[in-house]
Figure 1: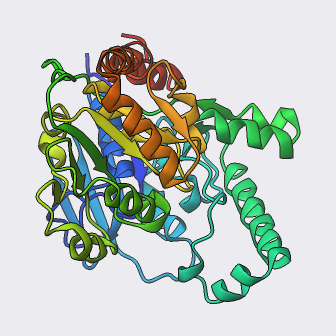
Figure 2: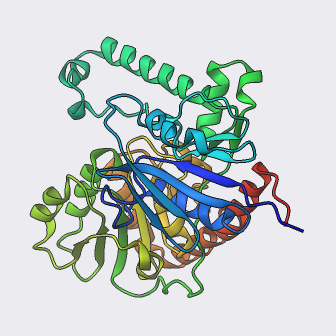
Amino acid sequence: MIKNPKPTIYIIYGLVLDLEGEEIVIGGIQKYILGLVEVFHQKYNIIIIQSAKKDFVKEFKTYKVFGFNTNTKGNIGKELFSKIKAKIQVSDYIIWGTDRISTKIKHKNVIAIQHGITFDFIDYGSIKIGSLLKKSLFLSIIYRMFQQLSAVKYFLRTDKVICVDYNFLNWVRTVLPRNLTKRAVVIPNYSEIPELKPKSKKNKPIKVLFARRFVEYRGVYILSEIIENYVKQENEIEFGVYGEGPLEDFLKNKFQKFKNVKISSYNPNNALETLLKYDISIIPTIGSEGTSLSLLESMACGCVPIATNVGGMTNVVIDGYNGFLVNPIAKEFCEKIDYLIKNKSEMEELSNNARLSVEKGFSFQIWKKKWEQVLKIRN
């Protein structure tokens, strides 16, 4: 008896490998997509569709990447889909790596991933009329309204939308009829759980972690203010600042000369091993945040998180139980850091609760099971 060939899942996203198809791009969405490969590769063929300088095909053990040269100034997802449209079978799935590049297509198995509200922060520097928006409250409100209309448009393009937090779902419920919001399924992000135990919180110096992109909306300027408060306390506190981005030179010029501040690129291959060395993680995000992978990974490694009360992080941190939630203000971060330095036994308890929260609520196995339920896969 001839077995039916496995159906295919096509995952469409701008870049998972770089434009040459050589290296995996470091980022939260890329990690999310590779997590989906791990979930589904045994029962589906996995093909990732992305942009490229020149067309390429790269084959890995559990998935393939097709890179296509794209020239559009419009929706890149629409152009990428056109490259594979003729190959799609009825039983195949299309997964948009982010709803922002999705397009309306006639196929029954289509899923878009919504990675969190982005219109709670305006990056004035990247917009032509940014200086005008910054000066005018009225115009900035109008601009945000257009951003929200775009978010609704993306949401309505597919019949199934996976949201990484409840923040987005609750917003959708306020702006759309309830019958339309039923297409949303919340599956928070995940972290792997390291086998090694976190370091003791009683040792000096206390080590504080920041592992994010070096961009404004991830709170780099808040981070700078926080570090300034402690650079002279070499024996008490150390900072590990991991990442890359446009504000890297700003951070290095300001802090590289200090012995208790380490600035380095982020290596995802030994991320958990690095995080286990730290006591506290700070996530000073200003906006555009789902259930942060950085937050979850640091908690899984026993770091006590101090996070802003922004986006999906409020779905993860229970203030005073497994970490602290603060406003995006440097002073409030410093107050919590000082409190933890003076209360080591409570820091130990918060650390244990942080790790336990991820084990019980945000592990890879839980995430995997929820995704399998979406595709109705039975083991």
